[in-house]
Length: 460
Image 1: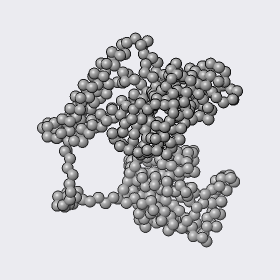
Image 2 (image 1 turned 90 degrees about the vertical axis):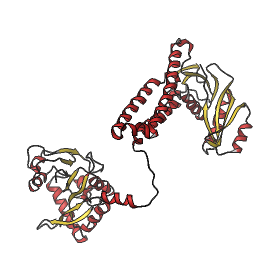
Image 3 (image 1 turned 30 degrees about the vertical axis):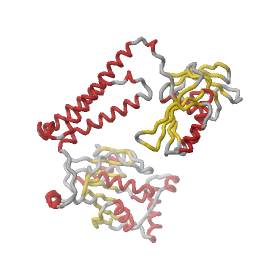
Image 4 (image 1 turned 60 degrees about the vertical axis):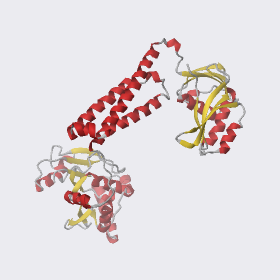
């Protein structure tokens, strides 16, 4: 035994335990509500004997001690004082920090029914002597149990009873020290495992030994493509950091290849298994694509900024209700709305919203808000706007409903190649009917028969 945790006091037993067990080093943790001057007397030492961890015994949580790092946990504070609906949390915490074969020592009363009145009196006398106020005395938890019941509690967590007990002589409260142990996991002997695997007939799946070294590269490509797609939801492609991602790819490729060569040799790592050759091929293709995109992006960014429109749209919106006060778009709709101009008090507004997917989200919020609005123009365009929908689960009724809508024209229709039960439709909607149409579509999103994929902003 080297590493010890003392719970519920200032570490009063630590010095004596270390002397008895001849412990010269090791870590000590003191887990208690707070440090007191009386801890010096309790631990019989002027100086700290361990790392103090503050703990709230009214709201039991885990503690910052590594798993399976402690040999002995001592708790002289009665478990009967803890919130019993949280007792499992406390015991599981102790189980977690103990090493296999680690010991948990705790004291509890053997509280059979005839003894409980005496235990209540003993606690009240102790509280009077120690100056505990009336409110604390009245609210003190005293969840007394028999020793067999306490043994059952710790067994349910996984502890094994050592059947080692010690009772203080001449103590009328039957206060008993109980010792339980965290069992050691019984692993199958390595030689036995190898013999079983060699002689047992079963369907085997074999992998190239070095292939695991190249898997991070494969998934890096997947994540780069996913992040590129997500990036386009809010920013034009010509700002994407293509060359930085290429640098990461080839740096990781060099590192993983170097490890594989050191572990399995040059021939095995580079030529026997296909992982290296596949990643090199993907890397070359990715480099060619990203270098071209990076060059095109560079040329686009050289064009004077006046050739490019801003990354937002301006909406002219009419408020239709009769409430005689100005509407707060940032608070009520979306905080990303800015440059709000009141064109006619309480009725007509010009607001600026970000483009891309945010544009999609804000238009849906405006359409679904309890205050009714009329959308008059988007960046001075007053006619029609394109919107893409998905009809799910081969719902012919919903598809027919769309095709029967007035004030819109279907432009294109296709089946999702990855989901044959989903039909995508791109259509043009007259601007003055857009918010109403969004509200109609949203009611079908709840039953997943229809999805608004995107409301398309303008190209600048």
